[in-house]
Image (cartoon, rainbow, N blue to C red; front, side, top):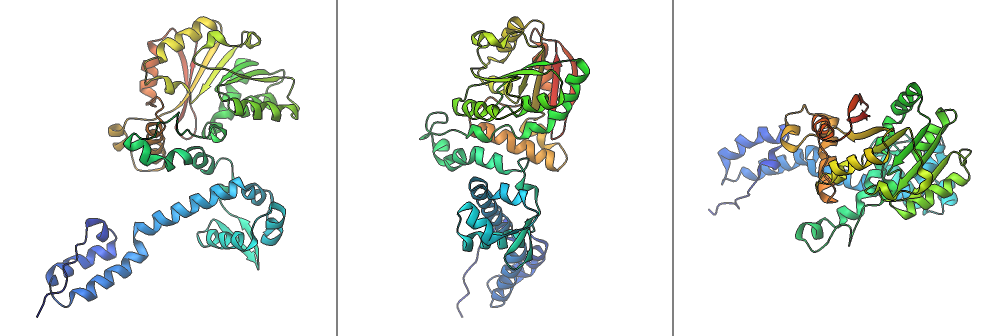
Length: 366
C-alpha cells in the first residue's frame, strides 16, 4: 500500500493551543492513513485561532478606515450619534450598498454597532483624530513602496514620501501638559518648530490670555492649509504660520522676533543620523539666547533594550515608531536617557523633564 503524501507543517501552523495538542498525535501516525483526520482537525482549529485571519482582518480594517477618512465618512459618523446609511451615502455621494457592507463588517468586528435596519453608530476611537488612521494615511505611500525601498530601486524623498498633512497627531496628547507649564512660567510668546497645521498654537491661543505664536514648517502645502484655516479662526490676529527650514534658524523671517519659548515636537531626532543635531541645537541657542527650549520626543529605546521592556502598548508603539523611521530614512529616535546625554553636549542646560502620555517626554532647557 502506498504511503499518503508527507505534509510539511511549520511551527506557525501549530501556534494555537488546540493545534499544539494535536501535534504529538500527528507525529505518531505520520505516514499512516489516520493522518488525514488529524490534519483536517488541525485545519479546523487553524481557522478559529490562526493569526492569518488577524492579519487579513487588520489589513482590511486599515484599508477601510483610510477610505472612510478620505471620503469624509469618519467625521460624519463621529458627528452623528446614530445614522442611516442611505442618508450618509447621499450626503457624502458614496455607494450606499458598499458603505452598508463596510458598516456591517465593522459591526462584526465590534468597531460599530447596528441599531436597526440600515442604521449604525460608531463605537471606536478609530473615528477620532487621535486614533491610528492619520498614521496609516501618513505612511501608506511609503509602505506601498516598501519593495522598492528594500531593493534600492526607490529612493525615499525623491520617488516617494510620507504625507505630511497627517503627521503630528500623536504629539497632541502632550498639548495640555505644555499649556499648563507655559501658564505656570508666564510664557505668552512661542515659536513652534515644524508646526504642521498649527494645532498646538491654536490650543495655546485658546488657553493663554494674550498669547502670540509663530509656526515654522518646511512643507508648503501644509503651510497654505494652516494659513487658510487661520483666516476663519478667532485667533487669526495672534498666530502666524511661515514657511521655513528648521535646519536654518538664522534664515527665519524677521517677524519671528524673540519668543519666550521654542517648541520642537518630534522633529529634532531627524538630525541625529547625519550628526548635525548638536551643532543645530547650538545655533538655536545663539539665535535665541533668552528663550527656553522645549524639546519633545518619544521615549524610544533601541531594539535590544526594547525587548527587555514588558509586553504592552508602549513597547508595541515604540517598535512601530522605530521601524517607520527606518522606512522613511529619518534620523533615528532614542531613549529619554540618551536624549538627556545628547542635550548635555550642547549649550543648553536641562532644567526639568516632563513626562507625558504615550511615551512622550518634554525636556525643558535654558
